[in-house]
Length: 267
Image 1 (tube, helix red, strand yellow):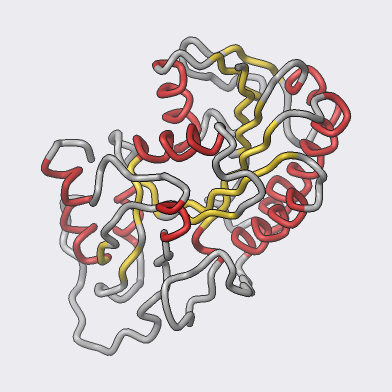
Image 2 (image 1 turned 90 degrees about the vertical axis):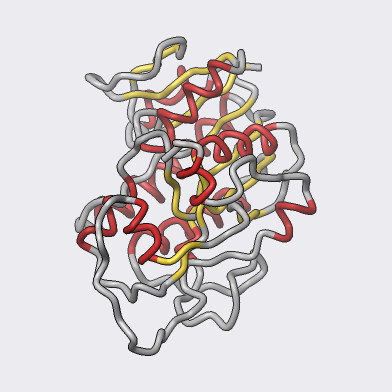
């Protein structure tokens, strides 16, 4: 099986590709000029915003893992352009040149409403307003309506492999008791490998480990102290997802919590 991965130079994609290569999976990566992919990955120079460059990327592949997106920016127009328009370009190329390929797209747990009355479920009616989750919601709709074989994985806060992601809480202004669903890069790769078997076809699936953690805990694990607070927590379910469907479909995380990852030296 040859797999195309978009977004392979990013925080998630680069680590995913390394694990795929180690598992003996033949990988191809769409990469812009100047970008570098992990060893063992076939590079295809192109850009998700350049439709003409996508035919060579999808030619002959049996599956596509679509990670490409932009979100660490205040440029909302750029976020929508890459996340939604880029997805449209990619889907058009797949329909034309690889219509039998399976498409597994990464989405985000941030798609769920902050004031939800419980952890987010895949069947919830969502109304994201921030550019990144809103553009992901729109991209999900494009994929569901594409006529292709598809699955969507809604990813939680991702950490591990020394990615520095825990440093995001240094400048955060959230309540220290706010909990987030989490997932180690090792389990991100495992979830995508399961989806590539067809086990999640035609579904949107939340994936996460077994133990949401507070901002206060994650800051401590990152090596710094987060400001405490005894104020009421106004959105207790923000950032948390229900993973019942993923478990029913056979996904079990190998690293059950961020505390286990710390104990194993896997942060």
